[in-house]
Length: 281
Image (cartoon, rainbow, N blue to C red; front, side, top):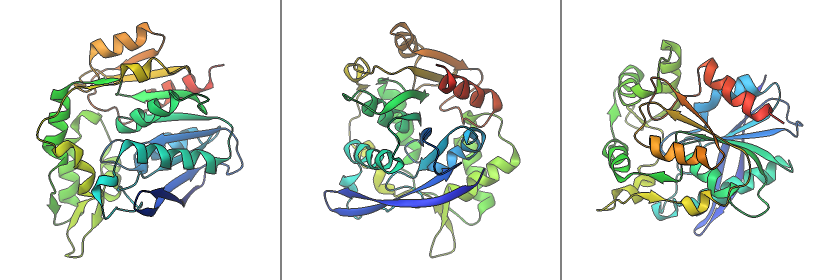
């Protein structure tokens, strides 16, 4: 299926910004799937998933503001979950679909969770990839340890080596997949080095002196659509206890063996789990 690169305007407190996204599949298909990435990632994380599912869905994969090809804000205080929800709502409206399915990894799952909990939500089915309504402080501290750094690489090979190290928990990616990640998760700097493909300002909230557990169980309790939870077996962000509590309240929970935070959604088995869940009546 053909992939096209598109964009639309989002609006924040300090003015307009551009949200870039990729579209996969028939542009007139009313079966729409939105895939939203984790904190420092971008929409190209979902290339394999989107290609596989574009036979049945029009798949939209945005770069949230401050990532990838979307605008990097001059004022980092604009990077808020409220802004992310507003931009995601604009993408849903742009799709012109009465309902959409949602796949979200980590931060992208939290955005989907917040939207699905709203009255009259257009989210039909929700896939949460290694995230839930409770995230322990220790996991947030671990994430802060590496996302607040600003490494610079002399070439893409060095960037690839770094990404292989920090994303080892993604699983057994092929050399070609790691090389693609190095291309899509970095950008060329003016000094001809390579930096990571996100605005360092998105980490502002994590740089706070004291982090606390994230607890939004009250939001979870308001969700009414079917939910699939994928948990990496070695994940410290989505704990066993949280996943079990989600399952007890009706979510379908599947543990991905040998994976941490977060399953890459590249392997056929993981893609098949998502397809089967979204196709269920």
